[in-house]
Length: 90
Image (cartoon, rainbow, N blue to C red; front, side):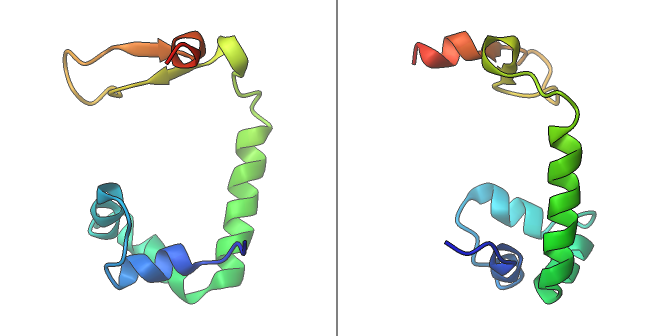
């Protein structure tokens, strides 16, 4: 497996796999990043590494301490929260 910027290249040519890929590709706030990362693989690697490092240094909740939101916060009335214990039972 190779870690490269082909995800962004594919988004530029409407070759996403999931519906969210198409939503991302046409989002005016995200599109500039897609264009830059599609053209600049080293920058894509550098920014990914920086973001991954930041996320891993913020003591993420793990195991039964964490929680997964099924619907997120955007929709009113959709506040079901699944804990990792709930996910293990599935």
